[in-house]
Length: 200
Image 1 (cartoon, rainbow, N blue to C red):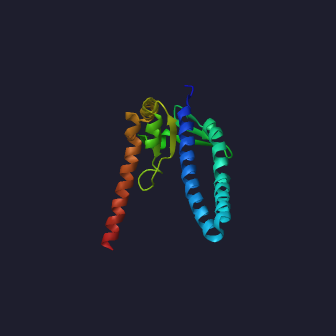
Image 2 (cartoon, rainbow, N blue to C red; image 1 turned 30 degrees about the vertical axis):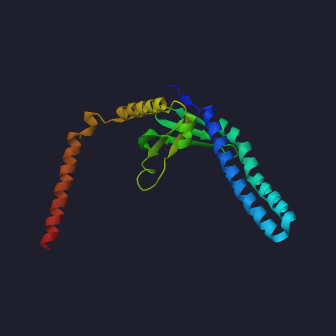
């Protein structure tokens, strides 16, 4: 079967811009207030202007690169559903391809944070034995999906087909007669050794 390819919706890019813009505005407001207060306290009106300038420059150092990287990062995201695994491709500066084999998947989880609900998108978390239980989070997340319920059903269906194909047959489940005799002989030998040790 050819892989089924999913990409995040353009609303996911809008969500990223919104979150970074909101964070930037809050950080800018806080640093301006702090810079102006410290500058005014130290050097009056000229210090307040210097504090304002420093606050704007400090925020521009992190905010501008992050805003410039959002669109390339969004375009780099690609999810592939294969017969036996999910692939997640991502990255701008460092590109990564993450394979999540179905044999390791323990759970699929749909989620929507408040921003997802605001933009009408959702996330499918693919959890594995190594990432469930004591560790928080998912092995991989398919983010920014407008049809997250449909993607969930497609991945769950592929997972069920994979597990159905991997189920042991009746012949494989029961040991062959020769194997059964061998196991019985080993068990008899272990019992004899235990009896000998108990007598000693």
